[in-house]
Length: 197
Image (cartoon, rainbow, N blue to C red; front, side, top):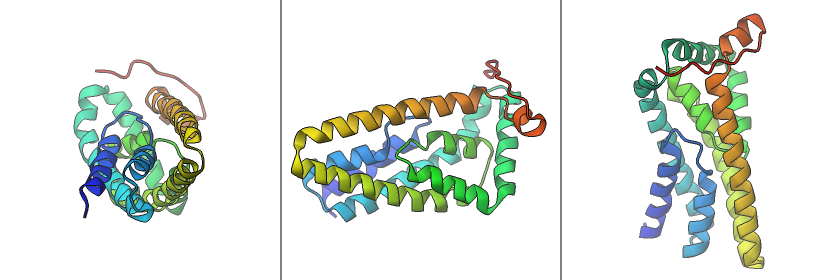
């Protein structure tokens, strides 16, 4: 395998292993595919593999640091949400798949799953299908735009990245500061900013 494909793999791990809503990995894939003129299907396959590995690692280490970052009430709140996701069965898989099909950061989804100590196999299969599909569309669109009008690609990537980043940050804040137990059990919307230790 050429060195450039390793760049794709490790770059996708890097953007998906951190618990921050960074721009989606497809942005990295599009850039590297165009810059090095790589095979599109190889970029998609290797990039998705890197993303899946990054998200898997995130689900493993986030429970270990969550108790240091968040107070016990917030951790219990998230674990409750995770138990609810587990109870839903195929409905939660459909929700994960649907969300993964969107060109948005999946960071909040994996932070929630990791903090709730969900088994990665409950999240990753649906994520992998959605990620492969959405990234394939994005990379092919990027390739088409680069081949037909190089100026278009900058606009597409920056607008999508900005929207994805803002939406990801909003989801992360909603995930952290909404009292999900009150919402699910009592149907009461509450915000709690006292979540840090």
